[in-house]
Length: 317
Image (cartoon, rainbow, N blue to C red; front, side):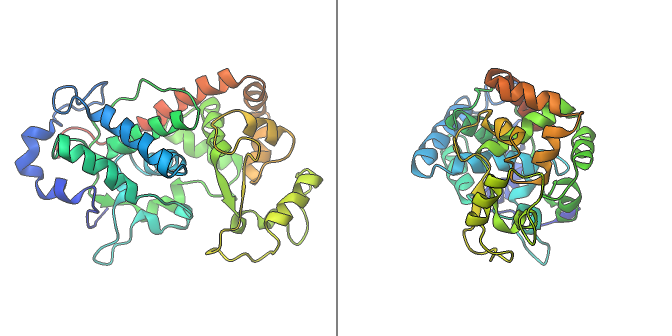
């Protein structure tokens, strides 16, 4: 594990960690509901207010909060290591190709600053990542997930080398994805539900042109494939240009079951989208979620709770 420079969200906290230990209240070894009930009673309210304000100013922040949770928790722990900046030759997890397209980290500082005014040195960035995802989902008209436990401790180490192995990429097989999620105790049904987050996502042409050129992937709906070729007109797109397609053109900023309806019609962007709609291990869940948005929201809520509680750092340093 490499020790790296703390970014804006961590620096003040860790510089004063020993002095603030009694304030930070991290003595318990487990996550729990209302962890900040006494140390910062308005913590969750402040985070919610900031998420709402940022959403109305920059709508795509809500999607960023959801992606942050995924990328943070599948790499070792839900510990905000994703936010650590590159320093002294040690590279941040953000430098991984698996973090391609991630943004809006600067707005974590906005949320942290608001909390610091109310309760200095108290609320961890790891809990901000978890709670902002919960509240961002609501802004995206997804389910309200009340049972998010808190009490996470922030990491001081970067796990760049582990990102490539633990964060699925666009070419990974379904078996690989299911195995990775199973390793962090997320079952098949919950994995299918988590992939429903693609309903508000988008894929850069860099990651989907292999399905279009030199020949069109036969598993793609032909008409949809032609639409994608208009979105991605070259087999060698410039990764620095804004060239992408949304997973869900119908309701692109809503966490709903349209993603499942699309992939059942062979209108998914990635190979994994086609595989979960056809593989016997996952297809029944896809069909049920496509038919019932309430069921999808129920399973998505459960999956987010499981993900947010993955191997958190707790207790004293």
